[in-house]
Length: 368
Image 1 (cartoon, rainbow, N blue to C red):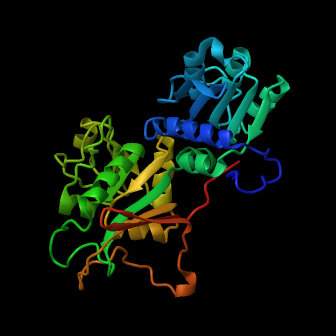
Image 2: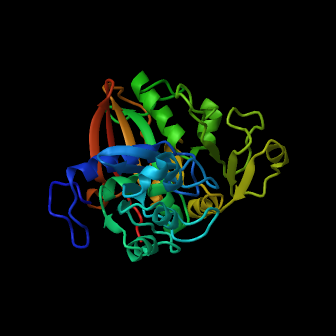
């Protein structure tokens, strides 16, 4: 990453404070497409001329024009001689839409600043090569880490063929997610709930297990987010027995089961049924459906199964300032010595209302 405070790594050009400012603008544009672009990446672009933004755009969903095209349309003739800031390397191949590298060349921009290279084998540096061959000055690696983090789902889908899995849960200060022998009361506060809803809006799908379905019957929708959309529910049930009137059953929902269960009623309700013996096999099939990010909100049994299989990529844990005593732990196992504990990287710690939020990654974000 080049954050402007240290010498750039080999192969990354020196950048200015203005470059960082405009790339942050492009990242903010890209964020508008989170949860809506899969299997494509979220990408943002701003066109700057004379120190002012003359065009901006983001990729809204697969099949529609890419961010560069929207930004160039907004800029019009002002794009000639301008600098384009784009969060992902412009594509150089014909897919559902023409190459964005060609659009930038034809528009007459003189410089392109790229946050991160595209891991797609059809691009993978070819976009930068095409721009440079056309005489355009190209700078690569500006806010690379931020862009790569924003594109984690797309990168996981391209490189690994499966979604980026984000495990989220809330627990008390003494590590309890629920009291014993009662339903799950609210552990965390309203601000935490609001943030969770924003995450649901930004991620492709949300997963729970059969235990959570039976105990809570959650709708798994996004609430209170202006312009929000619901993630696709993914219901893990080894037996395949899910009530067709469950609140999460709606067109686009997915049932993951290991059994050859009769799911005719669910399929009639628009539910896709996946049969997989392992979680890894299920994730590969979810990737085949174009799901790039999966929010894991199930209970301890599902979380333990994912962690035991090494299939949680990112963790987001809310810690409420409460002491419960006896209660349910977020994990059921496995037992391991402290030396073998899974260690988070890229850690952040902050507060959300009265709660503490700890986030971190268990996996490296795929690159080329």
